[in-house]
Length: 143
Image (cartoon, rainbow, N blue to C red):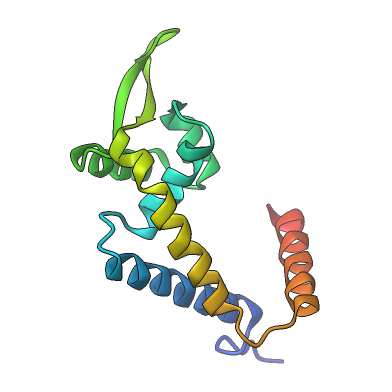
């Protein structure tokens, strides 16, 4: 049997992810938020635990060190985060939210909630729960 790329689970999952990512980006632009969905992904972790090390941010966002450094550079240039030396290891930086970064939480969370709500229109609660279980099982299988 020949592999059908366009109708494969991986392709459909990727297309759905990209569509949700683009929709979130559109909503953020409409609200004139100065961040991208990739930057939002980093900020969500800092809103939960401010002062994370760059390496921890890379790990929890599934990004490599170069990518996370680029994102943090941009956020720092925009005045959203700041790097500070780790008191226990001068070779390590910790990333802290500025007041501007803290103030973004409410509007970006609203965009994320709207993006998810828009994405899940017409899908029943039981279908959503089944989908979550399947995706978690996939992560368990290959993560």
